[in-house]
Image (cartoon, rainbow, N blue to C red; front, side):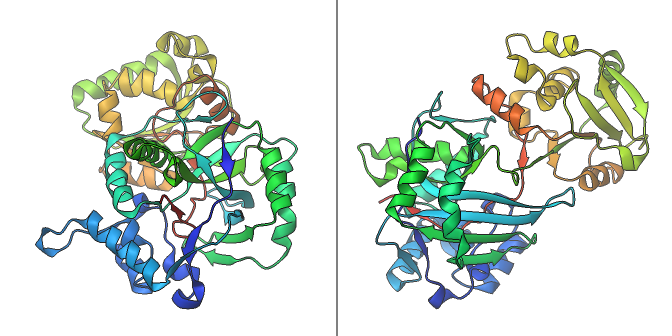
Length: 421
């Protein structure tokens, strides 16, 4: 079972830095240069200065500079560490891409780092090598988890949140509304009886990483580098129950480019062979959520006509994915990858991992716009992956293709930090 514990968190002293909105940031991998500067204009103490360090004049190593700045903030009292371990109840009230408003509930803790496996921690997606090297170099100089990993666990009775909920009836320790309009609230829970009740609810759980595979694998590498036991054997996580009504998954669409005449013809042949193809209005291009044989929206930059593609027979997917579990053979992103991205277009795992001819879009409007402008040659509009399918594929010991899930909203960086020394 996963080893879940309260943590002595490192966090901002709001009496010195002001509102959390000025010092927190989105995850580093969604921040461009312009947004980075906007965040630093809010406060010189914005966490982005450390979490996304910038090259400096004279060739000074940015990771070394980030570590020194992080240490200076602690010496100045900008960042303070709690004297006792706590859990942190957390809610996010948000309006999703579908226009519905929900509240997702979870809690921050630290989790002992272990190898992936049944009953402990499982991944659900393949990862890219590049981000892991960047995060490892930063971890070596800061000796901290700056950003949380988002993980899921099964709790049909809602026992963990029931134990934490009374603490959320008072004023939160911190509250921030981010640029997407999501309101994040955080309550520190130090009561030993409450912590024990949460621990009992989590006694036999398995954790499924929803977002943050790179950070978990980097933390594992760092822990092995240091060796022995200690704070570095734990990683910061926010845990949310699979059954939480505020937990939603949205699709991530696929875009391709570099389609010469030969590849275009191979794609057309594969689609005609394996799919029923129906013209639809552009506003109907995104398929409705659901299960059953793969359904896709499709548009290319030449014809600019929207289509709905429906797999003719599940047996086609089964034949294309021999040796995979039933759950994986029914996975939209897995079937698309096998039949069209790899099968027709000849993309390799390395192409997919390094975005060589492949890109991802979060919204239908973004995907269609990139194709209609000619920036990309074609787009495949996906259905969201059901949470139950994420769980079933992970339970089979398999990893989904990258970007198979879009858990919304993202967690903020800078609300809580987990020191590793």
